[in-house]
Image (cartoon, rainbow, N blue to C red; front, top):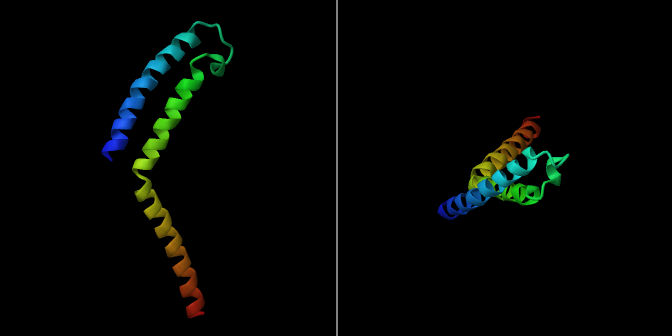
Length: 84
């Protein structure tokens, strides 16, 4: 999807900037946990948003596979009971 691709590209730009800031903060040694770094929340949010968009781009393929599996299992059970 073109819209998703553009959104992902835009988010990747912001993620990269935020990630570089996070990296600087972390290697400074000022923080005991990564989540204590000031740019951690923004970096994590960008990463999650990118993941959501990636999942959305192949949503139909995933749903087709899941629904096909469900239908196959249900039809197999119905066939078993019919033939029983």
